Image 1: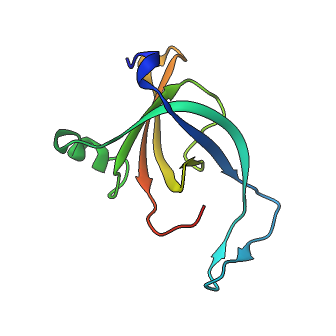
Image 2: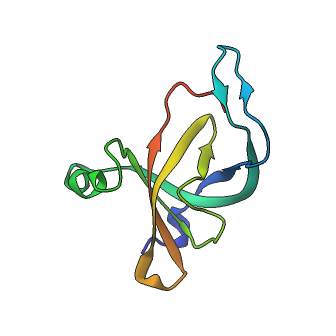
Length: 114
C-alpha cells in the first residue's frame, strides 16, 4: 500500500464519449473525443524489470504503473492525463479487494496531443 504522501501527481481521468462522432485531428487522423470525469492524486512510476513479465499478461506494451485511491470512475477504456502525457489503461487491479486503492497498469502514448 502506498502512503497518502507519496501520491502527489494530480491526474485527470478521461472517458470516451460513446454517442459523439469521431473528429479529425490536424494530421487527418480520426480520434474519438473524450470527456473529463474526475481529477485525483496518484503516484506514477515506470514498470521495473521484475514486473515486465507480469505486465505482459495485461498488454505487450505496458510501461507504467499508477497507484491511486479507489474510484469507480476508471476502467480499461479510460485515459489518464498528467500534464501533457496520456496513459491508456491496460488493467485495473483493486488492491486487496477492499475498495481502498487501485493499481493500474498503463501504456504511455507518445506523440499524442492532450
